[in-house]
Length: 412
Ligand SMILES: O=P(O)(O)OC[C@H](O)CO
Image: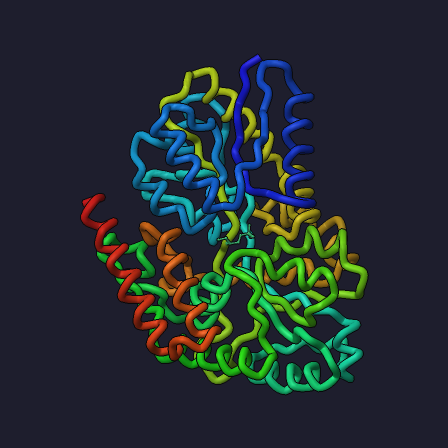
């Protein structure tokens, strides 16, 4: 039996699903054994994989978050493109079966570089019980940021200690926020048009929004909980009335929440022309590492064929809140009546099926995992009152551009 190692960053209900999928594949045949290994958060696992690659003991399959995509695409030798793995193993791989927002994110002109696995997008969850406590209609979540302000004030007045929180602040409030308002995050179509792209995260729209968030933080409407998904625990414990973040938060909310919850689209500014456009994908994809034996690649390809089955993808989507990455997975889910039985589970899908523009397709920027750290630091300077929103965003853009310039030079 050939073992196939799979490093991932899934926790809670998500990691249970990952283990079940590997088990099911392992039971379906006797030549290969997929071994899933939790390697820490997305950035921890990416750093561990780079070190392991240098030491010659990288895993076969590596789950990398969406912002690591450009770095992986340019890591020639360290990775083996998925279209090549599938072709050489003689496995069928229909790239047209994928939802365009997903395949577009992970493809180059040659084909799909990684295997789309857990694509999410930015949405809102809210606690209906806390809405009722504040005298708000539990079936009317805020559709716009303008509406949000009055509601947050009512929640605060009714004694809610955390009216609003968010996970992944840079993804939700800058990257996806910009696409939702059909605004660029970087020049050159957010980096898809070339390595010389530079950040545009300090424009008037972004400054306006971060200024609002800064005021909401001061008024106690917005409670900052951390850079990654720390805020989920606060929401799941019933402390926060509203959370914005990954659609995949659904997996643990539906399992753990002891309150009635609702799912709604990400709020937007209704006075911005072109909004709402579409939000962008997050989550991660599976990369195949370079320098492995032919037999291992064959096993990886077989496992990807298993993961490509519409019914496997549909189950993953329905249980986790990740997007259906193929049209077939979406259709199976729709026909089964799942969306009617579980109101709100199609919110993420609807935000994504819109035709994207050159500003809203996604981002393809090198060193972006490091740039996220810079953005996180600068936003924290705003929440703690050390910097004005404009100064913090200007500084994030400048420091981020230095990282982009370095990446451009190294990959020319
Ligand atoms: O929680 P996930 O897996 O949807 O990922 C969220 C962000 O996109 C990570 O960059």
